[in-house]
Length: 286
Image 1 (tube, helix red, strand yellow):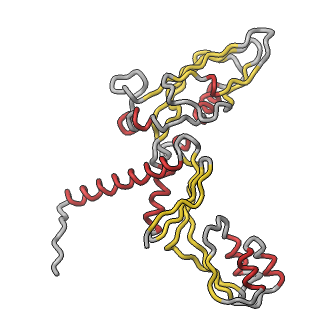
Image 2 (cartoon, rainbow, N blue to C red):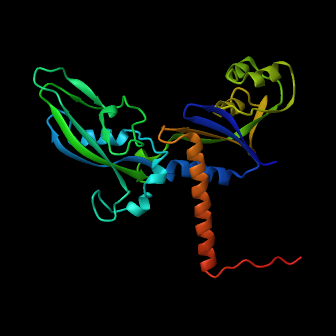
Image 3 (cartoon, rainbow, N blue to C red):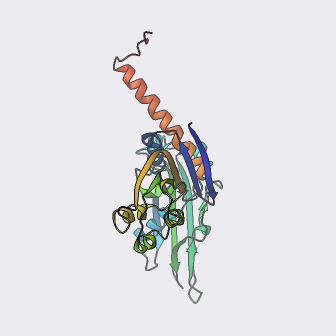
């Protein structure tokens, strides 16, 4: 029976147990999470004044690394395809960009300090730094920075700063066939899998499904090394585990739903393209 169940949800991370859906379909969602779900990030930075030892390029780079909340931005701003080739202030760039101002100066004799993302003045209060403590630059006595930057919606396939997820992993369910006759070296190798060790010590035989294990690469190593002949490892693709951890720009739920929505749109466009090529559905004869 097909179904999706939340196995774990904490912070920016969610793990789903997915049964009855093909690997290709679930993997398509995983890839779209990384490449197509849009989030806000800085695209342009104009440095008007900077006499710190930090190059303008490095400050621009730091701005690009600032994670910006994007939940409301997805509804407020135009998608990146509609803003392509348009710079801030140009005709047709309306609802494409958020303006970010930063003007910091430390007087002579003052105390140098780190400038953080919290000090960025952003034109839209809904687009704010997820991690306000993110350092931008160190400004020493007699030094100053004055810049204007612009953020827009983008997709991970353009650049990593527009990817909403720091992790999107898909795993099969490992199935261990217990054959018996394990050596002490084998049991030591399987130390991270107590269920398998227990079955071997008790002399049980048959299949053992290790659902929910996040780290199973060691099983294959043990089965082909110290445990050769004692266990055999295979993987069941009918029960999948999808683990997603976002940067904080979007919640895991929003990221997943956006990826599914984008997949639906891609399938719809492909279906229309096939039909426009003259290929039509035929009635199935009984």
